[in-house]
Length: 365
Image (cartoon, rainbow, N blue to C red; front, side, top):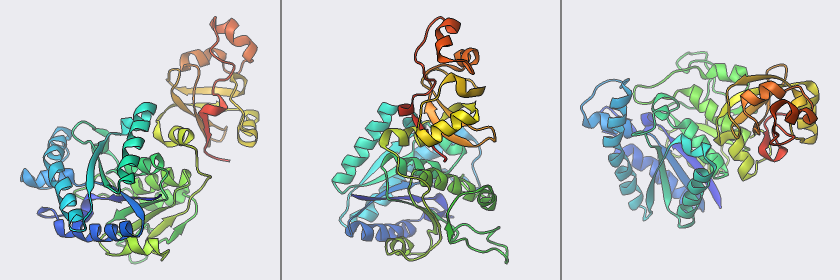
């Protein structure tokens, strides 16, 4: 099974009159072609808010969250129906899947979502995924589904993440500048690369190039190559299948995580940080050991037992992420101490380890 997750932004499939079925059909033509070649496409599509805005005769960008949610509720049916008609012309079935990002923070719901999508794919049905904007506020405020597409990619262990943008890829500066140059390959997402992304947005979308680069970082950290291409240029999805250089390719960074460690790395949000000494950092990176309280120099944030936190070195670099066995309130009392002192200090002991190695994912080193 070869899976391509394809993220389609609002600006690609809408025009001044709302949804553009002509543009949707053009993209679906290409997706159907790769489907016929044995690739399993999973679409993450924005556009519900833009479609609903047109039905409500609203001009300009909507800033009120409640109105955006109402527009999403009105426009979602038009969005999925446009995709269904387009795929029907190729004799293919499509399924609507509405997700919220909270699904990725709960292990049971995460597995259920994975099983549902995997079953659809096994029946050669094309899932059309969108954020459940009627109830999810964060997706309306940030990301324009870019992050959601990256999380879906890690959920399914996708082979590629393809983000359709309204520009050719990532440029060295604003694409409208004459001196701007397209960056064809990015081997590592550095601070300089993030600065190139800027914060530009369109009138119909909430995400700019910055959110696309952040999505690429999530995917490539999970060993998924990511592409940003121009969704208005027909055939570029097929070019990627044939290894023809188009847009900007972000190369994968690490070995592919297992399902659980992939969930820890990208699915669940961090609620704090543990600043480690050099010995603990070296032991985690070199030997894959668990984290003991003696290796912690500082606690940041508030969290409870079972929450995810980052492990950070003295220079501020994130080196691992894991699920803690103690709350921040408890850790403040025992960090820097030997494991033999935990029960004496707290009056109880859950575990010798603050983070067991089975609940930790190394993200650097």
